Amino acid sequence: MLTIRPITLKEAQSFVEKNHRHNIPPIGGKFSISCWDGERLCGAAICGRPVARRLDDGKTLEIYRNCTDGTPNVCSKLYGACLRIAKNMGYQRVVTYSLASENGASLRASNFLCEGAAGGPSWTGQRRRDYYISPPEKKIRWSVYF
Image 1 (cartoon, rainbow, N blue to C red):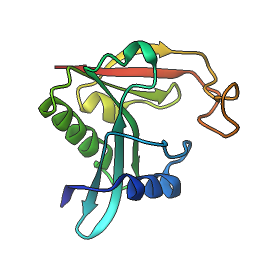
Image 2 (cartoon, rainbow, N blue to C red):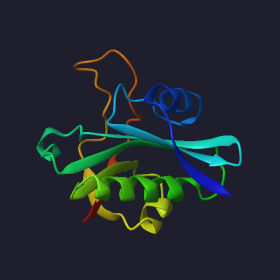
Image 3 (cartoon, rainbow, N blue to C red):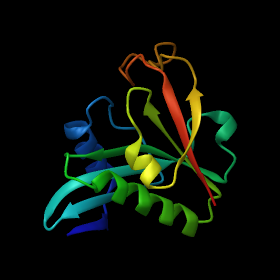
Image 4 (cartoon, one colour):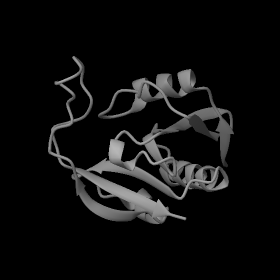
């Protein structure tokens, strides 16, 4: 049975570093949660302030990473838990992003609405950083409003 538990940011970052197929762990976050199959850690999500400045209004939360080891239903379980926590904390909107090549099934199953393409094809951060952030592919923004 899948269960949601708290996890430290450092532990969540470590899980993302080992298991995320195309992204590095985010630097910070407001909170992180984990998903367990019995006593086996099988997923982690990290949430925080929106990276896009115009979305950082104090009422919007961004899910930076939702990462699993491939265990079925973990993605949807983590998204649902993040949404419940955000609503209980008083947020009015939750946003997250997917690659255009991803089908978004877990996002749709968790009641996210597709808002279309967001930003350019490359979020490499080369203007400010010297490390990899995400593949050079269009991103899709997804939102839930409370």
